[in-house]
Length: 100
Image 1 (cartoon, rainbow, N blue to C red):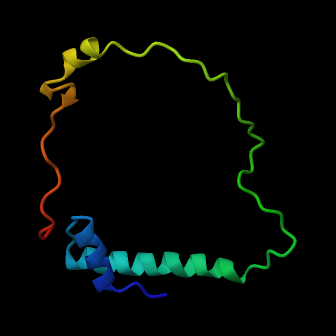
Image 2 (cartoon, rainbow, N blue to C red):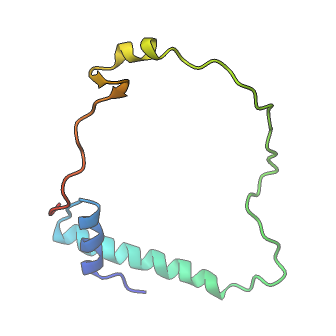
């Protein structure tokens, strides 16, 4: 499956990234190769192969669900540069959706 340069530019724009023409071409080529390799997996006969989600023999260790005291909010907020009503004020990072 070929990934076009237009598709790379579109996703880059959505991600607010900018690439040179050379980088865009390289990404399109590399992503196309990756998709082609993944598509090769569809040709593998997996009939009779059991589902495997993890090759390690890990076991979940469960603990009792017990209430514990939380942190002191006033103590935590001593390190906050700017707050209002126990909310941490930070600069805006999302714009109105214009060009990247």
